[in-house]
Image (cartoon, rainbow, N blue to C red; front, top):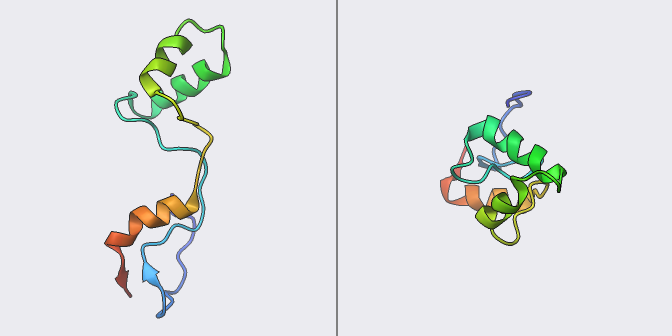
Length: 82
């Protein structure tokens, strides 16, 4: 979501991420509605879907994880000087 446009810094390379939250939805989760369903199920360990979801997600998936450094590393090959 674009919240505000600022003047370009002539010494910066773009694009650059300046903030965010949560991990991206896993591949093939059913889009945004599926992701929210996943988050809801993971909050309730008694939900019968949780065991299957955890097997499908694999080890290490944390829906709350976000790393601005990881995002900017992923954007680096697409950068250009303004």
